[in-house]
Length: 305
Image 1 (cartoon, one colour):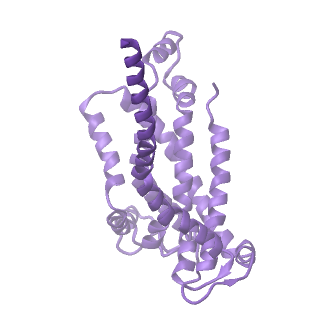
Image 2: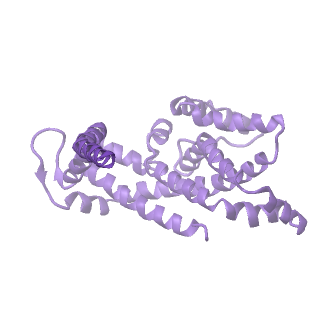
C-alpha cells in the first residue's frame, strides 16, 4: 500500500510538472522578447529598408522611385568613388603595417619590464586613444598649420622651407595618417600587450638557451605567436579606416582637390546632399569590400594549428 501511494504521489507530481512546463516555457520567451523587439525595430528593419533604399531614388521625402541597379552602376563608374577608396587604401598602407609592428615591439618590451617607466609609457600611449577626436584634431592643427604651426616654425628655424601639411595634395594623406597613428596607437598596444602576455615564459627561456638574440626571438617567436591578435587588429583597423570620417572632415574637409576624401567622407557627402539612395548603395559596396578584405586578412594571418 505504501508503494502504491508513493507511485500515485509521484504520478501527481509528474502531471503537475507537465502542466507547469508550458507556463515556464512561455515565461522564458517573454523574458527575451524585449531583445527581439529592439532588434527588429533598430536592427532588422533599418537593414531591410537600407537594402530597399539602395535600389531607389529618394531624397528624404515623398515616395520611393525604383531605379534598379542605377545607384550601383553610377558609383562603380564614378571616379570620385574610386578615388575615395584609393585614398582610404593609401591611409591604410601608411598606418596599419607600421602600427602593427610597433605595437608588437612595444608590447614585447613592456611585458618584460615591471619598472615604473613602463607603466608611465603605457599611460602616455593610451591617453590619446581615450581623448575626444575633436580635441586631438584641434591640437594637431596647431602643430601642423602651414603659417602658424609649431612644426613649420621648427623647420624655418633650421633653414628648411615650410610645408603645407594639410593644404597640399602630397602631404594631406600622410598627415592624416600620422594623426590616426598618434590617436589609435593606444588601442593597438592594448590588443598586442594582451596577446604577448599570453605567451609562456618557457618559450623565451628555451630560445635564450638555444642562443637566439632579441631580434631572432622577436621575429621567430613573438610575431608568429600573436598572429590571431594581429588578424583581429587588422580586421578592426580595416573596418575603422573604411568608415573614417571625423579625422579628414576636421583636418582637411577632404581637400585639397579631394586628395584626402576617404570613403567614409564620400559617403557622408551623399547623405549631406540628401541623396539617400546613392548613399545606401555606397554603404553596401563598402560592406562588401571590407568583408572581402577582412576574409583575405584572416586567411593570410591565420595561425596554423
